[in-house]
View (cartoon, rainbow, N blue to C red):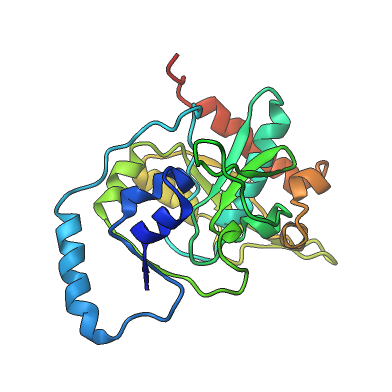
Length: 255
């Protein structure tokens, strides 16, 4: 097992957004430990949780940070993040857009953005993001082999949800409706108003709806997201509308 601190040191100080902050979390490319270590892990987790959440720190050169998250996996977070990033860039070419893939278990941004290779190190030992379609990208997928198993046991702090909700710009209803390609009948496979009901409960806005369409999946699978490969399609326009709603709600960055 390779501790995250050791992994960070192997990469060099300053690498990958100062991963030393999470030096107590465990990183391993092997199978999970046996049950005999569960007691030790629970004790360590309790000790770290007692310290509270880390303080937010500004990222040098970054004025706005958008987080795409959900309460479960496999709902299209990466697909949404990729296309919204491209939509934001398409709307304002004067802004530099970056994409950080925070999925350490199954990073998919390299595939969706058609990027391969390892990031180079700057003179200050920082990793240089790889770039395509005008978007700078950083992902665990650049550091770990495509088929290499990864187990990263970190903190699961439920109180963070409340803190995050204070900064949420709104909700996106992904895979909102499926239209039959033959008869054009529309079906709400996952329900019609779930996100809107949740938005009312949380006092948030719905930023927009993204349809369930095979073209969205296929274009990402080949590294040509729909916003750049089919910019005039209804699906791309859905992402562009959401990007507009996001920009409208962004707070004014500090001078």
